Image 1 (tube, rainbow, N blue to C red):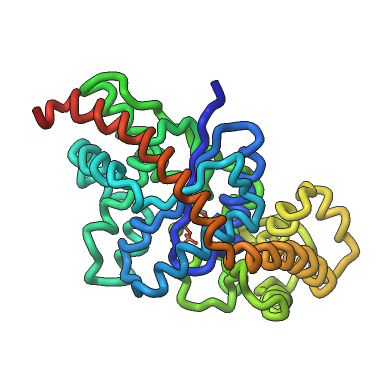
Image 2: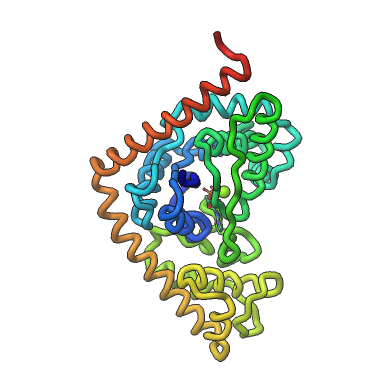
Length: 328
Ligand code: ATP
Ligand code: MG
């Protein structure tokens, strides 16, 4: 039997080049090897405030973007998280087997709760819902960017704990992290992660950005004064980030890129990076606009995805109810 791989993205705005490289691009490779599941994590999005009209729009847009990027609906189960009521029920049962201390130690919680003094408890319990997403689909592998590694590790701990306490119900998921391009940073502040929700969008490339704007953002990326195209994330975070982007979009190794640009200046290198990014995005945008207007096509994919998602997680739900001793 094929191993299962699962990943999700939040509809918290148009996805970024970081999301594409850290998550979607990997799924495009895995769809040929594993049984693949990819979903829109809309329940995760509401851990912070969302405008309801924007949110709906973003959900549909994200589905269309997945497909436009090359996620093949024939090879993937594509679904929307909130359309399956079992996942939140499972999440509650897992929550009661997760410690407050574990959750309050999570880096994402510490970062995001700092941004708003009046944060919700959903922001704290977010990783448990993520564990439920993974566990309820019996996923073997979870490809994520480095920022989500800690959450997958917690999902493992929860699965192991539950298996010991009740019975061997859950597959213990493994995280998959690619070495290059695992964390794309903000072009303006290259010591910070590129995020959909960064307040300043000057250093963030979104997949649906105007292509001239994309070029400008890359050309004005923060670098250093050394004028050497060398990979050194600690001392040269800006240039190293551009190398990561170039490497992951061209599939060239970092060493080959350093050789290719040994006599080059930053302007020249940035132009080359911009060419590759613009080329990638232009193809995605063309397909996106076709798909977004085809509601019937999207509905067919999502109905099928929802049904399969519910069918798998209901089985897990029933077993959990049973071994915990809930209900009749
Ligand atoms: P938000 O700011 O709303 O949290 P985000 O940009 O972090 O948005 P998520 O939806 O939280 O995006 O994450 C989706 C996937 O993209 C995850 O697998 C995550 O690890 C990956 N990812 C997010 N940002 C980056 C990045 N800068 N580089 C590489 N991968 C990333
Ligand atoms: Mg995030």
